[in-house]
Amino acid sequence: MTARNLLHAQRLTLRTPAGRTLFQDLTLILERGDRVALIGRNGAGKSSLLRVLAGDAAADSGQVICNAERVLVPQGSAAPHAQDGSPGEVRRRALQRAMHEQPDLLLLDEPTHDLDRAGLDWLEAALGSWRKGLILVSHDRRLLRGFRDFFIVAEAGCRHFSGGFDALLDALQGEQHLQELRYASHLRRLTAREQHHHQVQAREQRKKNVGRIRELDRCPARILLNDKRSYAQEKQGKRRLIRAARLGAARTWAEASRRALSVELPLAAAMPALPPAAVESIASLQHVSARTPSRLLFDDLSLELNRQRLAITGPNGSGKSTLLELLAGVRRPQAGRAHSDATRIGYIAQNAANWCMQESLLHQLIHEAHADPDTAARCLRAHKFPFALAERPLASLSPGERLRAALIGLLQRPNVPELFILDEPTSHLDFLGYDALRELLVTWRGGLVVASHDEAFLQALKLDESLSLSTPLRHTASSGHLGYRS
Figure 1 (cartoon, one colour):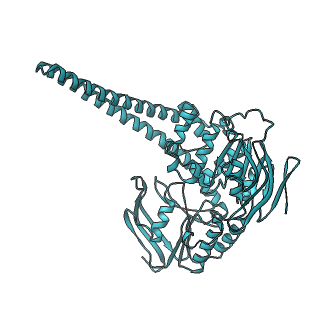
Figure 2 (tube, one colour; figure 1 turned 30 degrees about the horizontal axis):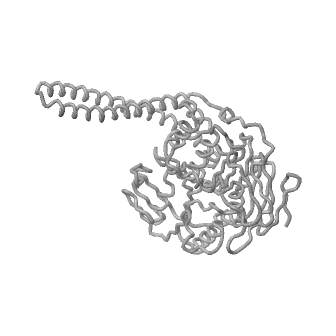
Figure 3 (tube, helix red, strand yellow; figure 1 turned 60 degrees about the horizontal axis):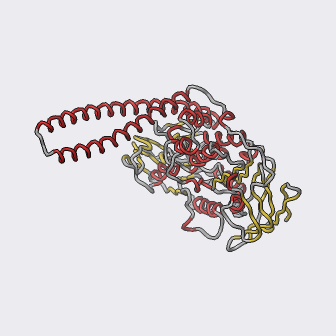
């Protein structure tokens, strides 16, 4: 390690607790004053790598040499020092403390998460003037446009990319299609191995049948022979059924995914038709008030929604999440009346926390939405959702992956929701997921209520109206439209 080197990671290998390899034989050298952004799809291991580089976690093999002072601000890092305040307020204090220490190397994991617009402005300016070493994990395009050096973390291999952010996006788009082709090829190899295993089992079964004939020649007690035969046939019969079902499902899915990859499907073709609009409102609030133990969030708020497309904005702690929970019917108002038709609403909380379940998206599409494998594969292809992730339990996905999966699942239900309520949907999304979500919500013509600090994202959605919260406000509806008065 030379005097110019700030950090040297040598042949790092890291696996998940389940044994999945995140990266292998990774080497990374950072010189003093270097600014590097770690990027990669959700779940690729960026946060894990950052903890190893910070010295807070150990790799399965390899070493990290760093003789300089380093400070890591991980995701959800502020709890030990938290005071009363919103997650965004707590997050900003944690970032300010880390920068005040002036370490030689600053490591930030998703620092924009939970920050409001004022917080984002502050962070962009603070990082722009930072002259020491910096490793950033972020999906925020606003921050990443200030970087020229990117380290792409991927299971297929980690690598350095130097150039502008737009050139990086073009490269990632091309790689996405190649990854799906590799996945389809991997499925075919799996089914071939399963078929071979099935043939081996069949040969073993034939040998056992020969053994039964020999056993008959020895003339054992008939009742004992019948008991042994009955038990063996029952056990082996169940195994054959399970094996045949698994092999058939794997082969069917492999063929369906391969067929879906052979065509480019427009997203509009995968969007369901909405039922005729009803006169009754989907969600309404009448003179509702909400407060935290320490302050009033909003007072005397009245709102009526059908299929409007509405943005909810405001600083951290202004009550955006509380308002969405009231509209979705998962929270009761402290004063006033709230009504929600749950059968017409699709609600996804922050980090898709209300969708942490063991079922996979593929299970939902086939068993709950009653889609055949070909239809499910075409749907995933149109939404640009990775086939491999669709097979994993929703609880095992990253928050960004889980949000996209939840939206796709909602859209394919027999009774499609007429109103989506989304709380900070762009948090934790990688670049390709961000673009896919934006395209989905622009194409979707049903109702939409979305709370977000991402101004560019909200503008791209071309929403009908916007409701800005501050603390405290008195709100009212006027002639069926939104309005407020302070």
